[in-house]
Length: 308
Image (cartoon, rainbow, N blue to C red; front, side, top):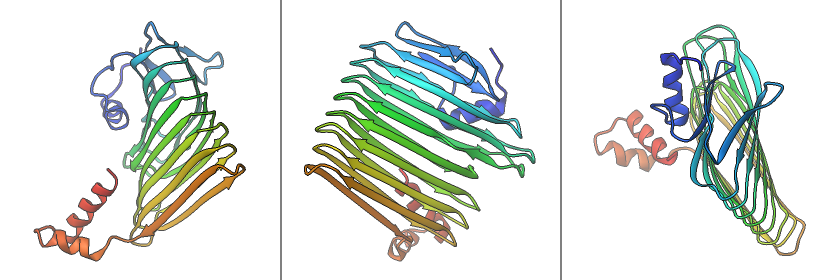
């Protein structure tokens, strides 16, 4: 067990809402090493033989249990790629909390690339929460490139909450999902960039079974000179339904590119995409300013409400 310093403890609060050691199964990774780990009777966490990640095995029928696997980096210049595989048995109902925080006070770039693969059994329900956070006053960048693969068996449900609000200089997120009959995927992404930050989110969802459904929604705010790209494709290969939506606020000199894409390979595939990019409405600002807020305070109120 490795003792966490105060910076690492603060980042754990940011990315996983952890104020103390969590109950249930967990694996906390700090500066490239496993700092703390706990397993339960139903959830086992096993280090990969090559030392580049972990396998999380959840027994069939596991209900109302959670797994926390946050990562924190406070060492400037550290770069790592970690592969974590989740094997969720049939008839489960679990919460998985991941996320990464990077505090870089040095001149070298720090980078964490987490590759997560989920194999979800029949009739199981998984809620997955992934938060990214960056801090530190160094000139080195804070880089996060998460990759997520989801393989869903019949009548399973995966709810994904992806959040990145502060401090990450560069991120390239790739998410792939394959759904069998009756499976349901729900994605809620919340993102804010500022300064010269860049953020790319790519989703590839294949609805392969009858009655499969997907709802992929991103809400984002781009400020200063930052750049965002949202690229989502839903492919319907069976009688199914899919929806993808990008709703963005653009400010200052920022740039946003939205690329929604649909592919129907079955006559009964019902697919919808929506995309909207715009600035904060002037009447919204005026309304809040009449209540005594400055223009800057009014903008923050609107943004906070939009990203909730």
